[in-house]
Image (cartoon, rainbow over all chains, first blue to last red; front, side):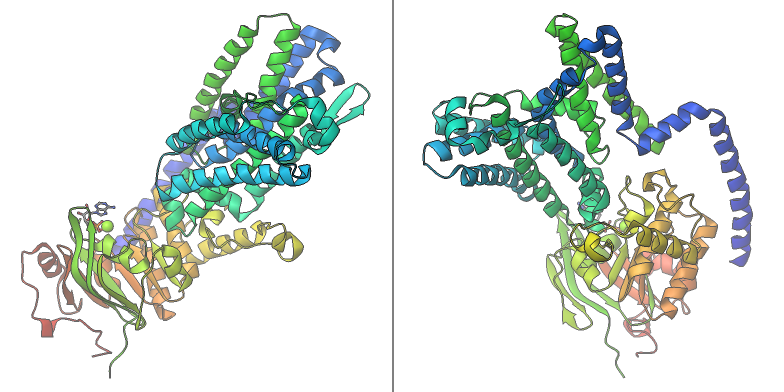
Length: 356
Length: 267
Ligand SMILES: Nc1ncnc2c1ncn2[C@@H]1O[C@H](COP(=O)(O)OP(=O)(O)O)[C@@H](O)[C@H]1O
Ligand SMILES: [Mg+2]
């Protein structure tokens, strides 16, 4: 035995010399390899670079028309709703799921806030809490269906999307609550629309909420055990379970939190458009998934950073406003976003190669 | 004198659909021993240890730990009793770091408000512990304890899984083919580690196909065949080729009174 062990050590030492050479060889290829590694550890870097570049390019092309506090804060106002919903979507996608019901939950929650106040005369503060609870509840049901019934998230949330949207139209009788009425009787519903004016920059509470939300989620995902578990469950659920994580609890918490965040988006939506409208926010699903994908979060789960989604949403906002100011047909925006989506996923595949 | 077994399984049955992976099998692990489990592929070795630690639930039969019947519904419950397992598939999260994997599900939080209110992880403490354990075991040299597990070689991954089990086990450790991906040198480290753990009084269940390893460290050898405990033999009284012959059915097992159903010390 000892003989074979010492033979083994000889074998090992020659082996380690061989690996060393490979490592040196790879270092010669320097920059590309380092870049790949850097992106692997900082997945939000690509969307950040794209964001900065696109701001610079539009800034050069359009000058102060684009590169002004007014225009830049206008972009923030335009992306706040999608940004908040994308935060929710990011969490679910990190667990290797998808939430197609985000837009419906958002609208339903805003309708509950409005109707509870105006139909039942419930104090608006309490109506807001009810709306948040409804959103959380729907999210939790998604999570329970995914974990208990073992249904694919795509199917669960596809069904929930239809159910909640239909319930929203039936319950609201397709009735809009007008902005003027809200600002007279229940201004708290428009809370997130309040503006802080600094020079020509216009920051709304909705924007500030969105930024705070991303900060809090980044902290939770990187600094707490819950965050580690979200990544582990998205990466390999079975391994996470066997190594002692409560994967199903993590999943239910993620879907419920997604529902809560979407309900906040519903509240912010009232601030953004002034009224409560059951037909608003129909594109939130696809726009949030777009932001997440451009933000570099892998649809296979377990990889990416939630900040990437914020950058992803901002990139879309910059392209939309920039191209509009250039006088381009709006279709160019969609075309470029399509290109960005495919490019982002290609980069993701390339970065993943580093791990093998 | 009778010694109470740490694990006592009687008539355990586990079915996966139409496949009966464990067919009324018994199982005994005694204090302080290394029990090797050998058997052909598909004999049900992994299934029976998974049933013991709650990773799967047995359909029939009884499992007692230190004399008390247990019905684990998740590996977490076994872990709370101080039972650790190195799975054949390792059960590591590829994207998480070595330190994160070692502390999966039992993370340390910072002292004070940051830990109790803001739930902040004590990354420093976890990294130090993980680094110390890996160095102590001499299992490998890694560039950084913050390396994602997916950047490690198969052998290094196995090292992390073994180190994790050894670091936290209080009652006993199950190792399901822990040296399968290891080089000769690292395998030797794991064998030394097994001796080490035993000398601390913690018993080990070792599943392995490597007969020299089995015969080197095991006190008793549980031979599993067709979902059943076929025989338990004393490695000092039987040769490797005889053990393999019994395991494959080419040879009848020795009569029960010549087997080693309980350790010599307890008999
Ligand atoms: N999760 C599972 N689903 C279905 N069949 C399984 C599963 N796990 C094991 N089996 C089957 O059970 C039998 C025993 O498997 P296993 O316990 O892994 O054996 P061993 O570890 O001895 O190779 C095999 O026939 C295997 O195919
Ligand atoms: Mg096996």
